[in-house]
Length: 240
Image: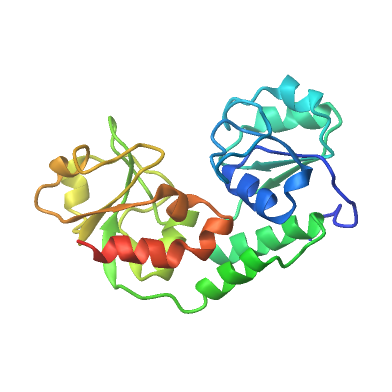
């Protein structure tokens, strides 16, 4: 459990889109700052502090938050260290599985005074017995060069829980089209972020394989979107 769990936090800056959505859904009044990429909930009216990789550290400090939320993969170590050097409390999470994400979210919600909000209960229930598809997929996350979702990632665990095995190993390997086809995936799964794949941009490289297009938020975010993710992703994956 977090070492400062007994504290009460009233001013939070989130540098993680997933957690911005989680805080806004649980205790919206405490959120004072978020990144430019924090797109949910829609219409969020807080101070913007730049991107996840290049936040305006001074802007965060000026907001005088009593807690900053960060992610080991999304945010840079040097920015976290600069915020801590300025005397701010920064919590850095890095859930690698759906189970870890649900546990992490419970910890964050506990810091907001509501350890088990309705949306988290719904997310937990949604992942108890999701549909099992039994597919092998290659999941690109970038082009030029082609980069892929590897099996050692949160999103790969999301897919695995739905019965979709990611064919690439590691974190985010670079691999060409021919080599990827040689891994014999059943289909290509194209998310709309971080690269905005579309029917007109991506599938043409793999004409022999069926393609599915999925919501990147439901595939990679860990927050309230987890309650919808099994149903949303499954509908996209079977709509070939």
